Image (tube, rainbow, N blue to C red; front, side):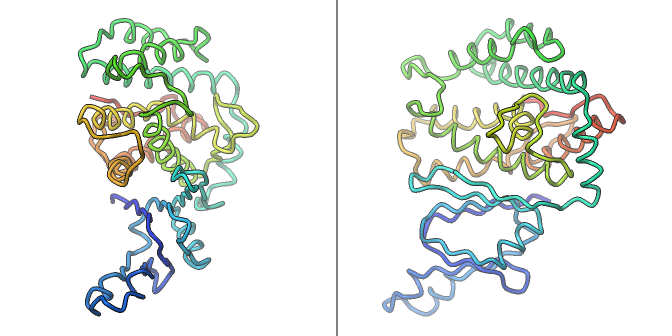
Length: 310
């Protein structure tokens, strides 16, 4: 089942009623000039079990504690944005998996050689997907494919960084003089927003599989609460990049993060990907990736399942 991504960019009151997320728009309700029929349509009800991600992007959105509890109980990722409309917070449940304590243990007991092997697979998959996106643009990728094929355990040769430098040099038109930086010029703003959505979906998948998003296989920043999410999302990043590339090529103004651009980026959890030889929505595919990670931790498998960009 494809879970929905809900975005709240206007003042709203959202609460829980009969197992559903209820939305009321105060600006409509208080407008005496509007007919009652329109006011009735300004109230919506959405089953909690249909929701995967909720994005709150307005300082005048009120959300009840009852709704928050219900969302977390159903493993919904709740993202909050700041005054500049960029995601700044992520709320996830503490426990949604019945085998969580066992999963935590095998995750914490994972050996360094195993983590290095998992990172090798992750980097290989990321470089391959970056190469496929460059291939769409007619860019030479023999070097990328060579790097992907030669990544060693732990990536001591730092092929990930080499591939990233090559990827960002050619992925956008030359006239943009693009430099990838979180605080850099557009379309960095689109990439940041898209990656924040992707990160939330990955963290949700990890929690659903009974894993701690904090304990990474490669990322180790002590100030980062989502090191493992940042690891597992790497091969998925090119799918976000592909959306941003399409926006740029379409000629739409991307200097500001408009509602139209956000709408396109909020489609990330539902886009179709190929994983394990099958087509599926990205959010569903991520569950396969996180489930395969559990099997690697418990020793029943040696292979992480990642998507392949076509």
